[in-house]
Image 1 (cartoon, rainbow, N blue to C red):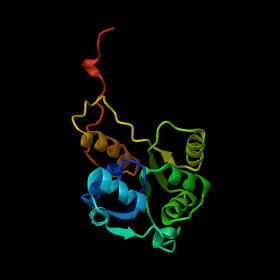
Image 2 (image 1 turned 120 degrees about the vertical axis):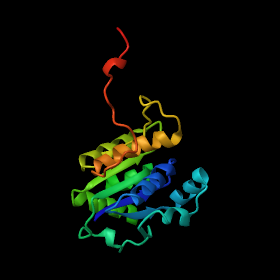
Image 3 (image 1 turned 120 degrees about the horizontal axis):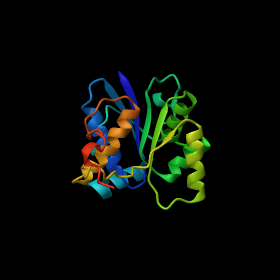
Length: 194
């Protein structure tokens, strides 16, 4: 059983975390552990019309963000890593500084110290110097800073397709098979003439 920790924080883009949970729910052999911050709940409601219970139903296991003694707060908890989708700048800073002041930051801290994969779908623009330095720190710690920047080369027809393309790339980072988006075939004969 592959275990994946998914955190949804207060940045805009709750759809990334929700759709990730929806997709992972359908993958056999993957167990999701959800962390949902209070600001994440607000965004899920504002952006998607979902209540806390709606989001929590998508996960196999739900942890209270205040429960610093939860199983995922220990390095002995075997997981493939963690995705923070979306990741607020506050959460990014807590991860970069090793604050571990709530279970989201603590679970990330555990993944970093155990050398497990941590993918942060950071959502902010424009970026200030503190944001950039925290991204650098997380990267040096082994994390993957993954701003959910939409790709247009596949000519998406909906927001859902843009989100799924990003999530396909995220799932690839954890070796989770998926067909959420077509693979790039190369330009082939479609390249414009010079």
